[in-house]
Structure formats: structure tokens, C-alpha cells
Amino acid sequence: MSPSSLPLMVLLSLLVFATLIIGSESQGNFFDNFDITFGGNERAKILNGGQQLTLSLDKNSGSGFRSKKEYLFGRIDMQMKLVPGNSAGTVTTFYLSSEGPNHDEIDFEFLGNVSGQPYTVHTNVFSQGKGNREQQFHLWFDPTKAFHTYSIVWNRQRIIFMVDNIPIRVFHNMESMGVPFPTNQPMRIYSSLWNADDWATQGGLVKTDWSQAPFTASYRNFKANACIWSGTQSSCASTTTDSLQDGAWQDQNLDAAGRNRIRWVQSKFMVYNYCSDLKRFPQGLPPECKRSRFL
Image (tube, rainbow, N blue to C red; front, side, top):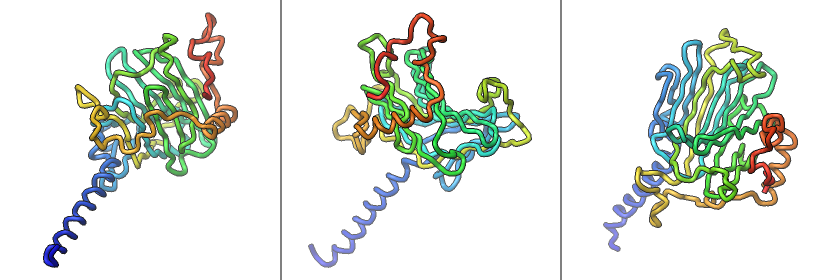
């Protein structure tokens, strides 16, 4: 290598390095990855050059956004800070969903409460249009004081709901038992903030206090380590794609530490489990309830 070519090589290396940095950062950029679906720019605001997004709710409307891309399996992470103060009647969501009457859906919903009372984290799994698989939790921290990471791991074997990398729920693929599981419908990422005071807080007994409006929730550090659906095939079909990044999610399960954590969460913070609701299912619990939720 001649001395005169060295500066050019250094410059090219710096350009490649800069491109890699920009590419990794764009993964969390809301301008690049999401579209506002309702509420308008006055309620859904993308801030800090695309690094943060806020949703607001007032008496006239809520707001929401969805991903530009569809995914078929992956790990989706989102950092969120929920509506502070008296959030009774409000629902903040983060979920995956396909389209159509027989849609699949994987839900995080955060049900507001009066000041000083805990949020309820509502989880559900829909497959082929059928849901009714609710589990609800309180959190072991105040989700309005700081950002926390909420994650969905979705592979062919199971769905894992996580909070700050702690598993709170696992829904296994039990198609062999006749239980539908989301396997073939690509899904987008959705989030919204809306009024549901007919049911959200204490069964609808506590209504939204509009004198506290606007209510605002914040999002940042989105990450999708997932298979992107192009309309005919998944990016994971290519062995040369870099879309998988870290592919640990593809067969992710709970290890011994994970099983200990989920037992702790479900023994201390679970407030509703459809698999324990005998009054709701007088003819017998759904078949998936026969399997241990910790395995």
C-alpha cells in the first residue's frame, strides 16, 4: 500500500463505520419505522429527531401509530413511560396484530387507575380471531416515573411477554392439542392511547377525569429483531440476510432463572388468570390451561 493511498483507505473505513452506526440507530427511529394512524400530529408527536414519540388523549380523541413493516416471528422491544397521575379510564397499548376477521394478535394493554393505585397490565393472545386468553398483572414499580422495556418474543414454539427482561407470561404453541397459535399471519406493531372508562378502571366504576387532560404516554428505543415480511416471503428465508441480528429469540425458552422469575411475578403480582376462572368456563377450562405456565 502506497503512503498516498492511506488517507483514502482511512476515509473509506470511517465512512463504512459511520454507515453502520447510522443503520443501527435507524432501527429505533420513529420517523423511519412508524406511521401515525389517528389523533393527528397535535396528539401524536415524534420528537428528538425521531428518537422519541408521545401519544396524547383529550376529550375529543386519542392517538396511535403502527409500524410500516410487517413481521412474521421475532423479538419486539419498546421502552414506555405511562400516563402519570390520575390515569383512570385510560388505556395505553403496545401490541402486534394482523388484519381481517380471523386476525392474530399479541397484546400488552396498560389500564390506568386513580392516583396512588397501581396500573393493571392486561395481556392477551388472539389466534384466528379467537382471544379470551387474558392474564393481568400489577407491576413491581411505578411505570410513570421512568421508561421501562416491554418485550414480546414470538417464535414457532411460544410467545413470551417480558418486562425489563423479566418474563411475566408464556403462551405455548399447542396446535397438537387443537389450540390455534399465530404461525402464518404477518403482524404489524401498534400502539395507542384511548379512553375506555366504560371498563378499564375497576370494571368501569371509575370514569376519566377530563380536567386532568391531556393524558400523555411516551415511547422510545424501539427495537425489532425480527423476520420482515415482504408480501410473499420472510426475510428470514434468506441465509445471507442480516435482519436477524441476534437470533436467540428463534428458540428462546425459559431457563431455570427465567422460571424462577416468572414464578415470582405470577405469585406476587398476577391479579387475573383465565385458566383459574372456573365460573367463566363452567364446561371446563380451555385445553391449554392443562400445561404448566412455567415450562
